[in-house]
Image (cartoon, rainbow, N blue to C red; front, side):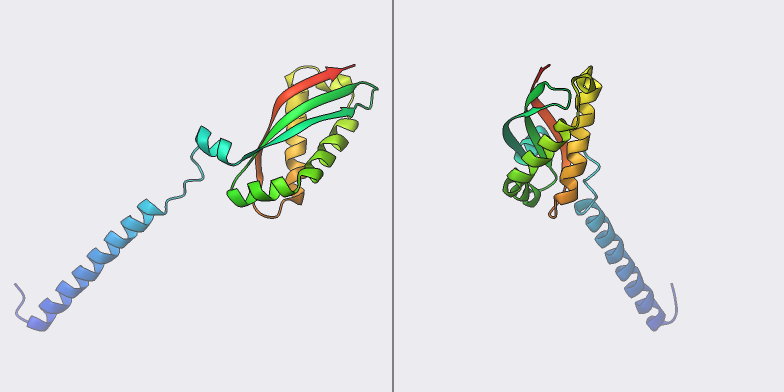
Length: 143
């Protein structure tokens, strides 16, 4: 093929290094691919969720609301932190509801908006991880 042995050895070494590099790149890409775009399984949602006690508080319009929530976090550390911040969660929920009237909850959009507001406020105080979703598991409005 080539007349110079040194050139042959250099080409073989370069091809070997290139092959090792390609194999390493494919391996790293396969095992460390970004999995955050995948939807979490129900087991992961339950694992990283915290149930909160029922909260009853007054509305601005004079009625009251009674609700229970499940809050989903993005990691085990965030779940542990959220459990420690139980009093802050209750405080945030009470303040958010106290600024609402009964008409704010007409239709499903009012409840969705409340969940989103609670999520944003909780993420402001979270340090380890973040809140992914707030689920309302029980809701009673008395006007």
